[in-house]
Length: 57
Image (cartoon, rainbow, N blue to C red):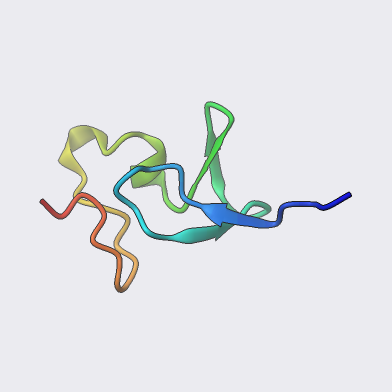
């Protein structure tokens, strides 16, 4: 049996890979940041991680 320890952030426009043990979990999905987890409410631009253009447009 294989255990998943990393996966892509559940935010569609995000490119980040998250460690599931440290990820922000919302609605049974894993996210790299609070901004991604809350659907970028209040016009939060993106995750802010270097090299990721999450919600930059």
